[in-house]
Length: 117
Image (cartoon, rainbow, N blue to C red; front, side, top):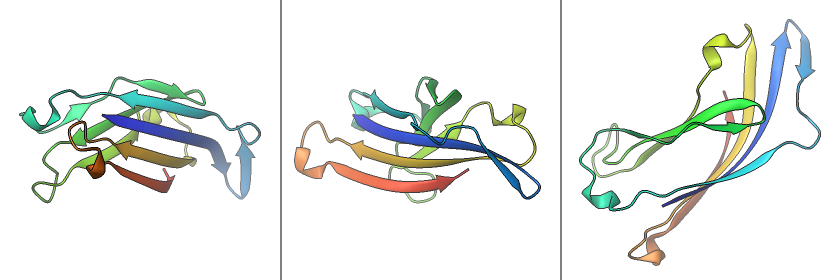
């Protein structure tokens, strides 16, 4: 089971001027993505449903057996509609995720990261 705490600040940059679209009251979104029988999955890649944060569409995708190293879980956060964004557009995101082992809670992992997308 995945628990995600995501805060996003979207900024559009043109030349040397930065226009902050969302600075005050940055939206914090909590998302739980439950995957039952995870250890029995026999797929290379799995996607979450699309969700909205700060007016942007996001999704999580993961490789249950890892992408470059076997037996490691690879988790990615993706902005779904970034192809329609203006040139120079970027997103700053603070992301915390928890991977909960449903059988052995001692193996639960949490990790935080700052992303500049």
